[in-house]
Length: 194
Image 1 (cartoon, rainbow, N blue to C red):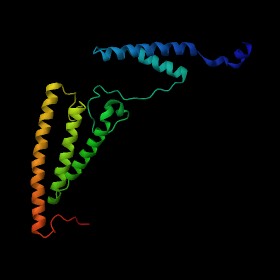
Image 2: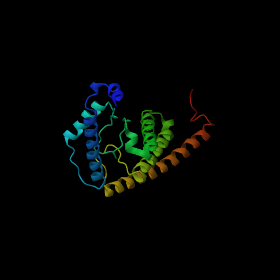
Image 3: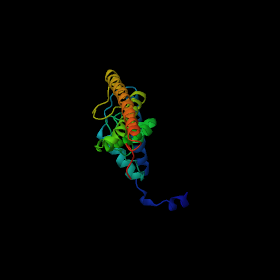
Image 4: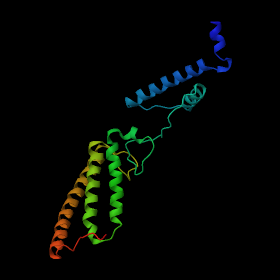
């Protein structure tokens, strides 16, 4: 026992007190999570959040900084740290949707008549991803500021499906016109200049 007392430095601080505060804070947070999962509202006291900070400073445990998001169902146009936790399985579709948006914006800035087919393909891909995100994953897309409820989600899905059907028709027409012009010009129309 004497050897152990000499081995432990005396200026170790109030480790048992810090551990106790940390344990009580974890219990409070677990209760709040359970209440939220059951659909209740929880008041988060500043004192409990502050005690987590005090306890982590005293014990030297580092916490992961995660952004607070009031509506994690809202898809953002720009990536944010820790968003994989919010989107879960939909993360791959969210990343593909962002790329499709960028591709669509890039295609729309090109005024060339030859790129109409490319713009329509980009529109088609973007709308397909929006249907997946809203319909299958239950996410809400910009410019919405709050998550959609059931009727609003159904309206958005219907509007997106109609837009996708319209893009399919326009793309078929553009494809026929593109190939007719290529045929009439002996393949000169639509060639990429490099």
